[in-house]
Length: 232
Image (cartoon, rainbow, N blue to C red):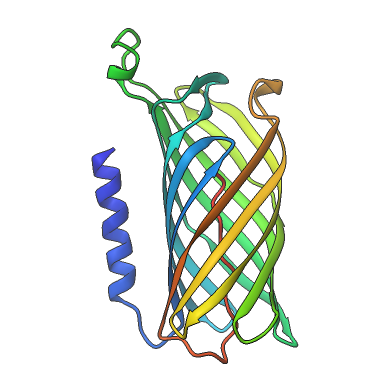
């Protein structure tokens, strides 16, 4: 787990160091959800072309209610998700911004041996994730933007067994407010139904997150990329 944390920090450092005059942003947020009591998320995004933004997202969660091979573990363990959010601008008229989101990723979660009294060893899993969807950013005035959208996260466990873990339909809502030209505060959430593991995993999901966004090499006349909230 320590190596994964170091790798994520290294990748974020590399993306930061290669920033040019293109618009880029760094989001740091903290939230809670059906699955995690507390989750910390870091997201870096860089606009590579006028219509395409690529990013790297890292999240560490302290589980509340999660599953490994459709078996519940509660109030213990860890969850780590590493994603690569890809935003494709479909339309931008009257400053309204509609984006197609494609977000592949991988998730590691488990319970440490000391939390199970070492009876079952290191109880853990690895899963691959993919989340497509549409996100809409709506400017209200020079300072306030609101966001809505829908995404469809899909999760497949690959270790310790191959299992269709979860499929979800999430409705998103939130907003961000400009404090200075380079700093915004944001508040986002999502909610939706879920199904997986032949009915033995999550049935309903929600999450909420608040945090700060730093804009890098940006200007006020450029559209604001939506805040990409992870699937907790």
